[in-house]
Amino acid sequence: MTSKSTQYEIGLIGLAVMGENLALNIAGKGFAIAVYNRTVDKVAHFVNSRGQGLPVGGAASMAEFTAMLTKPRKIILMVKAGQPVDDMLQALVPHLDPGDIIIDGGNSHFEDTRRRCRECKEQGFHFMGLGVSGGEEGALKGPSLMPGGEESIYKQVEPILLSIAAKVPEGVCCQYVGPDGAGHYVKIVHNGIEYGDMQLISEAYHLMRDALGLSADDLQQVFDGWNQGVLESFLIEITAGILARKDAETGKPVVDIIVDQAGQKGTGKWTIQSALDLGVPTPTITQAVFARYMSAYKKQRMEAANILTGPDRRYAGNKGEFIKAIHDALYASKICSYAQGFDLLAAAGKAYHWDLNYGDIALLWRGGCIIRARFLAKIEESFRHNCDLPNLMLAPFFRQALIAAQANWRFAVKTGKELGIPTPAFSASLDYYDSYRAALLPANLLQAQRDYFGAHTYERLDKPGVFHYDWY
Image 1 (cartoon, rainbow, N blue to C red):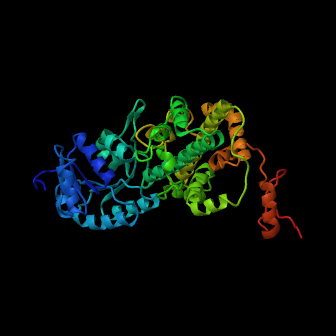
Image 2 (cartoon, rainbow, N blue to C red; image 1 turned 30 degrees about the vertical axis):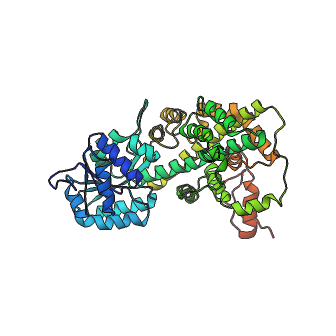
Image 3 (cartoon, rainbow, N blue to C red; image 1 turned 180 degrees about the horizontal axis):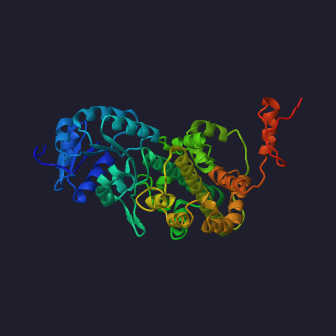
């Protein structure tokens, strides 16, 4: 497929859409790249079509592929997470030399990446976990990149990664994150926040659609307007775009003919599983994952709609005021969602001995990725001014934003409850805010219950020590 004498600076295995687009991005920046896929016909088609005229070479076998690369070899894996990565490593390793670098650019679980780092090091190779966000377009035009592994090894591939990553006024959306699985962990948290963002936007849409009876065209105008202010983000932008689309066959808005069942690939679940393991409250993200589970109960929900009763869903008050309240509820809840994500990063940094820079992570997400948003610049600024900030809600900018939004936030949640329109992520966000600011929670009663039936002991407010009460 290519000249055996040609030497390529980097290799890529896995030519699904993300792999193809990332290879084109690399080649488009002037780096010669060799590609391989288990389906050899796919390699030839890619090289002779989308790769034509670019420094792209295709290999018909693993042996040919590795022979095409300069040493130490640098190889990006763009294959499905889980066992396929281990299978590919097993096939690849016999063709490598000590010192070669393997970069996993898939959505791997961070614990798998930590294990692979150890195993590859034992065999004399280097393994990096590279979080990649931005979807197909980002891979081609500039993704957000979250590299983890040995920092000295990252430096060897840094020129390529910096070249292909998204660029924003604040800098390049690629920076070394930390050892072993840190890069993939940051990507997992990114995806958890993404789940939260998407659910919060959907709840705002739900309130305006059902309570106010707004059409898709009306809603498009609302979201387009919101994208000009503090809510400016990729997800708000594409929401406006989605609402504007009409189905060619029926003439109806595309969004109105889509079944209300949401899929998921599991990365949101990984986020909340990690939160449970580390003891970090992430209610907004958790409710976003559960909302997708609830959406899958489509048949049961349709049956229940004819049996279980509730209030009239139409709002009788001022339409403009309610839209403003929903806007503020969305903004405040979004702040809470990010606060939970960064709190989780802090806990993981301590647990896994990663020296994470939260301001840098915010910058990584400023462009290229799915959660890119205007207010990430304020997050970066907040952590730059106070790297030991215990919670994002305590930063002056976000504290003031929450105070300003609070009345409307409560009004939107209350109205949703009164109208019987579910707002699980809005509600969980407000409860998170109220719980975090509560000097006294009812956990004293809970602990008394635990001591009553299980002698689990308790501490006292009035003196130090651990106590047990004789309840019987």
